[in-house]
Amino acid sequence: MSNKGAQPEWWERNATLKEEMGLPTYEPPRFKDGTHTHEIVAELEETHDCDVRFVGFDTEYPDDWTAVVNGEHVASVGRHRDSNGNTVFEIESSAFKEMVLDGLEVDS
Amino acid sequence: MSEHIVTTVDELNPGERITIQIEGREITVFNVEGTYRAYTNWCPHQSGPVCEGQLSGTWEADLDEEKKINFEWGREDEILNCPWHGWEYDVETGKCLSREGIKLPQHEVTVTDGDVVVTL
Amino acid sequence: MAKTRYSPQLSDYTVVDTDVHLRIPKEKIARYLDEPYKRRVEQGQFPTDSWDRYKSGRIEKGDVHTAEGLREGLCEQLGVDHPVVNPSMPWLPRIPEGDYAAAIATAYNKYLLDHVVDEDDDFFGIAQIPTQNVDNAVDEIERVGNESNIVGLYIIPMGTPEPLGNPRYDPIFDAAEKYDLTIAFHPHGTISAIDYPKQYYGFNKYISVHTLGFVWGNMQMIVSLIEQGIPVKFPNLTFTFLEGDTSWVPGLMFRLNKEYAARRDELPFLEKNPEDYIREFYFASQPLGEPNDGRDMDHLLEALDAPNMLMFSSDYPHWDFDSPNELSKYLGKLDEEERKQILSKNAVDAFGLNI
Picture 1 (cartoon, helix red, strand yellow):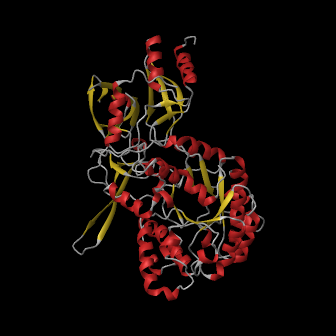
Picture 2: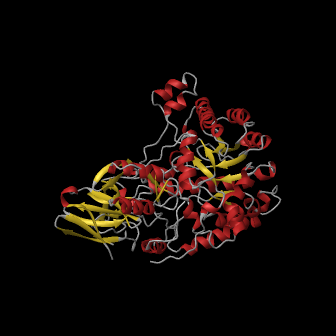
């Protein structure tokens, strides 16, 4: 599970926005195992000096999104909204890391 | 405030959209006939993925002098339909068609050197 | 506009969903039919209506018909622990041929057992009962009555020549009581549009029949139960009402009390006020109305005595489903025990669930 010790400052901003909109509780996008994506992305970007993004190219819900690494489309990722309207990517965080490293052609 | 390059002008054609995860939420940028619009992808109804709903037209109506209601299907591709419950939004303004005062959270979009930039 | 209601986290609670539908492909139903009904369904002769429920694709159409699909879509994604699943053949009352309707109901119930209820120990089922022919209805109840995890009977309270409280239908309630099966009345917007009242033909928008049909269906069923003394005749039967909205229920209770006070001699077999009988019924929460001011819904739920009468339901995967969090907006004002009652304990009591 994720380490909530160092919450990015946008977390509170997003939570407040959802509350103001009268929407269910905010949680950042996460992987299937509950790890928040921003933690994994931060780790990958720092360690491997890369840029990792989750993008829906002209998608309609629930089309798969694309993991984009250094501007390259690396893989498709399934996703859905949970009952609070927060996003869950249908892949374990470890599998996602491997996928990104494969895309970078780096040994995991 | 933070600026984020979402895509390039060449990669987002009229009628297309791109949804990208930025700072823990999903932002969708639409190219509406050459104008860019960016919204947070949360439907004010129940938090559904509204920006990834179908774009369509809708029914409009007016009352004529004889008090007859005339229906007309129009505004093709201007109406964003939330896929969860069908709430309709004007893609150009983010305004909800059925609820006064309800609007999608909107963000400024600028173009700099061919890059489409969203400001959160 | 800032709204600062406190909504409890539903993941902290056991959640029973009392109205979960399946959308079973025709070819899979056909496998459970004998000839000549098998070929009828295979050839696409299936009752339906022409309303555009999903706005020609603008609303996403959920397509779930397996235990696995429910586990993923409803349990994992929406946080439901125990679905009470109905096989939901919505147009069953519109089939004029009694034997064909009975065969369809049986096929749906067999599918429900094989592919959902028997596949997951957390899942429960309510069997759909045809109402065209009372003997067929009783046969089906006898057939499913001893199935473990079939906890009730799904009955659409519309489309019959007379309301279901009429003594003609007593054998259905008798059989249900014998097998300790809870009655779950579930109305349908467009059954009324064909059968009653006649002025329904004049509504030419789906919003109208959908708004009225569900409310009307359950409303007239409650009045019929009281009129015919069904709770008196079958005191061990539990009655639940699904997908009918609940905001009108307090008004109906109070109106029936007033009527009964003046016209008691029309119902001399009643042993207490109509409200007292109705307060022993259970009501599923979906669809929750959406007032301009949420406090109005607080008042309605209080008048209903929601902690004792309301059971959470989603109507998954239909287009007008309520996410669990739609209800949780109104649970913030209740105490912990009251929330548990609504989210699971009332359903456990109503359906005798073993969880």
